[in-house]
Image (cartoon, rainbow over all chains, first blue to last red; front, side, top):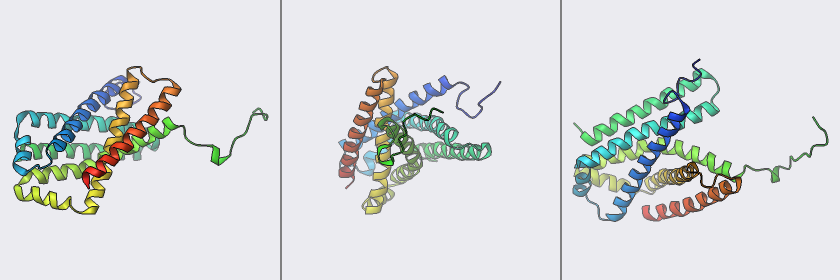
Length: 115
Length: 124
């Protein structure tokens, strides 16, 4: 019997693992960016744009964006299922959260590869 | 129900256990960070658009209100990161006892407060 259809994977163990894998990616990305900004107090446009011009930085950033979507889905799913009991309202809020994650992803791709 | 059970409804003696407070702030900071990402993405978009837009981001960041908003978002991210690392350490089997949970919740608060103050110093 299907008891849950809105979680990320089909099992809690999969969601649990994805939440942690994406957390590690986001943590490493955050610490990298913080370290980079701390190490470059006189950051100018050329240096900043040059960083995001590198292929590895674009891959790293896209990985972080996808991780953000997965991580936010598991987290917000957990919170909404805990506190919002009416099914229709919970589904609506989860749908809005999912839409925001999709917008973040497409926006991020647009920023990184900007056409 | 056994009427001899002790009753404790003294509001001043009832409070959430410290690990529960650490947990609820982890959830709230996650929501704040999720919303805050929109501001950070907007800033990243502007800063990478052109030299002029890069300087306008720097100008906007000179405004106290912008500093406050960015500080709030980074504070939420910092707490969420520290509390998340606490969970990963617990996943490895460290500090899973009641006392361990209480201690690590206190460490999480302490480290986060220091980080948030340092972030404020950095922004201002």
